[in-house]
Amino acid sequence: MKSVVICGSQRYKDEIKGFADRLRELGVPIVFEPNFERQRAKLAKSKESIRLRSKSYRDRVPAMVHEHFDRIRKADVCYVYNKAGYLGVNTTLELGFAHGKNMVIYALEPEKPVEHGGEICRDILFTEIIDSPKELVKRLV
Image (tube, rainbow, N blue to C red; front, side):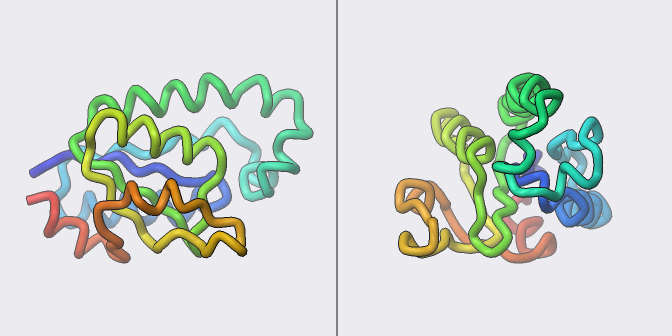
């Protein structure tokens, strides 16, 4: 079975953790997920524009993104947890990195329409929209 790395926003920290845990329950042996543990809970669920007001957050973000690049390097497949079509700047970087690595990239939802903040260049990188751990596991076998 292929390994998977999950990329997504800190605002969905708990949901990403639950998705990763469910993949493990379904037998996926290697699931890499973002490490959001260094963030204060209130700050982690805030919008990026709010998080960026915190100097300690701004000091930690580059290392966190770089650390997640290492997880992407190790995985076979990338899964983008983009609830409501949302992708922040850091996850967009990770998506581009996964694409540059020529990975298959699945996403939870389609990109938002452009008039609602979506980006057409991200949407074209998704191989397929897969909305559940059970469906993702079928692609990892």
